[in-house]
Length: 217
Image (cartoon, rainbow, N blue to C red; front, side, top):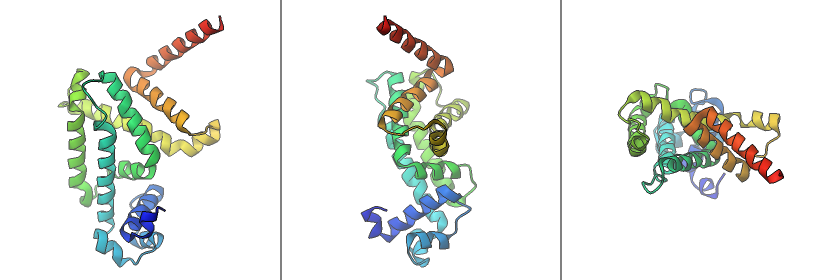
């Protein structure tokens, strides 16, 4: 727990709820459990957030603010569209790496019918779509076509997020160390996959093997 949270009951409530929602799901956690984990009186949850739904609303708001920065703020017309995609995916990987519980909670609750987050969820997603619309057009994609937006945007986030959900299993199976070097390569590989598919990764492997053969020769 951060020093800020120790002296800030509102932040303790927020941090405790994020951790519990990520572990047990939003519906699986009650305000009493959140209060206990945050070491606050249960009435303080109503005082600061108005209830469990208010906490989730704050979580969704913080997630989308940081997620928007990780994506939209790296896009530049001076870059090629492919370079922009690679920077976006690197930003998503770095963001989720350091905010994995926040991302899991936000992603898991997006499809749920929760009145407290309905408006803010719609507002944030629309803002994100608008922020990447010019990049869509540079790929000759149509940001006004719901099918294209639905197929592409959530797919990229889902691919990246899947690793963080499965990370303990992956570490056990492959004996990996999830350090800076791993995530640099991971972001690059996911970028190639999103831009060129499986054939793009296969082509990259062939090119790397060719370079290796030349070096051996």
